[in-house]
Amino acid sequence: MHDVRVEKPLLEKTDAAGKANRERFEQNGVYAINLMSAPGSGKTSLLERTLERLAPEMKIAVIEGDIQGSADADRLSKFGVPVFQLNTHDACHLDPRQIANALDRMDLTDLDLLVIENVGNLVCPAEFDLGEQDRVMLLSVTEGDDKPEKYPLMFSTADLMLLNKTDLLFATNFDIEKASDVAKGLNPDLDIQQISCRTGDGLDLWIDWLKDRVGKTKSGTHKINNHAHSHHDHNPKD
Ligand SMILES: Nc1nc2c(ncn2[C@@H]2O[C@H](COP(=O)(O)OP(=O)(O)OP(=O)(O)O)[C@@H](O)[C@H]2O)c(=O)[nH]1
Ligand SMILES: [Mg+2]
Image (cartoon, rainbow, N blue to C red):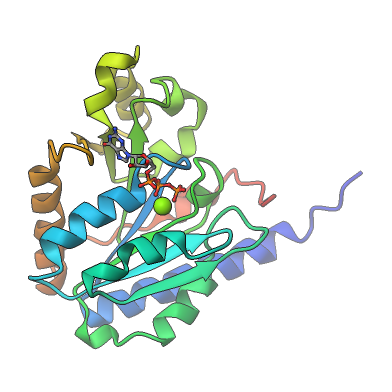
C-alpha cells in the first residue's frame, strides 16, 4: 500500500507558483515559451537558429534546464543574451519554483522574450505549468511517428508542434500525415510546422510565429493559456 496523500498539496503549490510566474510575465509584457521534447530532438539547435536571427532585434533571455552540467548554456553563450542554467539533479523536469528563482535574477521590465528549454523528456515536463504563455514542442522525424499516440499529454497541452530534422526524412519511415492527424486528434488547436535546424528549412515561418506573439504580448492582446488542465490525471512521480 502506498500513501499518496502528499500528491494534492504538492500539485496545488506547483500550480500556484506557475500562476504567479504567468502574472509576472503578463505585468511586464514578456512572452515566455516552454520548449520541450525528448532528449536530442533539437531544442538547443532551434535556440541557436532563433538567437542568431532574433537576438539583434529584441531583448531575449534563456533559461536552460538540464539534469546536470552547462553544455547547452555554453553553446548559447556566443549570442550575447543572458542564459540562466538550472540543474534539476534527480528531477526529470523544471519546476515553476525554480523558474521563479531565476526570474528574481532578471530584469523583466527590459525583456521581450523568455525561452525556457526544459529537460529533454517527453513525459514529466508536460505535467508542470511553469507559467509560460505557450508550449512549443519538438518531435524529430527520427523518433517515430507513433509518439503522439504513446505520449499524449505532451501533444495535447502543446500550442505548437515543430516537426524537426526533416532533412533526415528520406532515411526514416516517419509518416508526417499520420503523426499530425493523431496530434490534431488530441489537440485540434495545435499548430504544426515542419523544420530542419540543420538546413534552416521552415524556420522563416517559425520566426514569424514567434515575432507575432512577442508583438501581441507587448501590446497586451495575446491570449494567455492556462495549462492547469494538464494536471488532472497526473501522478507526480518524478
Ligand atoms: N540532421 C539534423 N540534425 C539535427 C537537427 N536538429 C538538431 N540536430 C542534431 O541533433 C542533435 C541533438 O540536438 P540538440 O539541439 O542538442 O537537441 P536537444 O533537444 O537540445 O537535446 P537535449 O538538451 O539533450 O534534450 C545534435 O547533434 C544536432 O546537431 C536537424 O534538423 N537535422
Ligand atoms: Mg538541449
